[in-house]
Image (cartoon, rainbow, N blue to C red; front, top):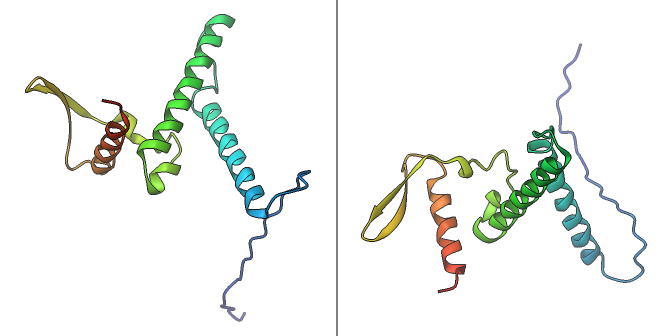
Length: 138
């Protein structure tokens, strides 16, 4: 048998149907992509927290779903306001910054968060905290 080597050329073709009669293609694509991000967030919530409802009563699970919705909102706003680059698009399972090992230290009438300098995402977390502080009033 002869060995065949070569490049396989792949072409990506994207199509979406809409009933919108006016508007530029770029505007329609932006609207479509924002809807896809919303659906990704719903998928992540289902995979992470809503696979099995942990409580027994209907009302208790209803409260659990509200807590999950709040957590999803906090993650989305944190990604939008504090993170940059590729970290802004990370899924919750990859966002290990929420489970970082650190130490809260009191000194000089202030509380400080100390992170291990060897930890791979220490710079990204400190930069995110600084961005959030800049947004805070006062």
